[in-house]
Image (cartoon, rainbow, N blue to C red):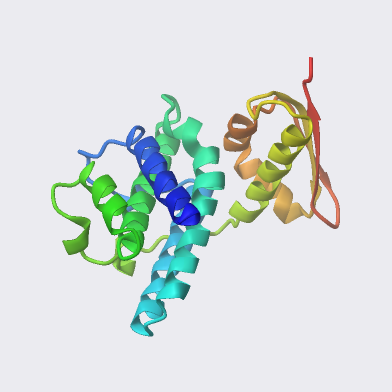
Length: 228
């Protein structure tokens, strides 16, 4: 019951948060998703729909819920934290449109995937931005994702860096909004490229002032906090 309550409350909260940053009166255009981080989220979301649909066809409801929950917590803890500043911004119109389109699509799909398991909370949040019931709305289909691909895998690397920043702040017992004077990321060239592509989102999410990148065989992160 405690786990289910936590999940339901999180779904309420993230729905409220996302809907406060997107224009629900505007028709969703998936082709506006152009940012590498946003595109990878959509590609992962499409894979989730394929997997959970297969699970339901096999009557493996527990596996479908497990997959959806795993994706959902990563979406909330990593993706939303990374893009929330960009989605709420006023500059970089293409970047803003990309984040908002990805957030809208993800929220729609996740609410429908959770509907069989959380019938009441999903009905509540669905009606916040739709007239009909989520329980008579079609199950997500792969054609909702257009033909988007992800040429630059960035999500895992950037999420790892963000988690390292959070962990350092928690260890230092400071606010997650505390400034990072210096962030040093060592790793393979592919990982460093991922950090470069998501530089603005990462800086905003971690309150980072300076970023240094260095090639290394394995990914490691050094965080220097402003503790004054």
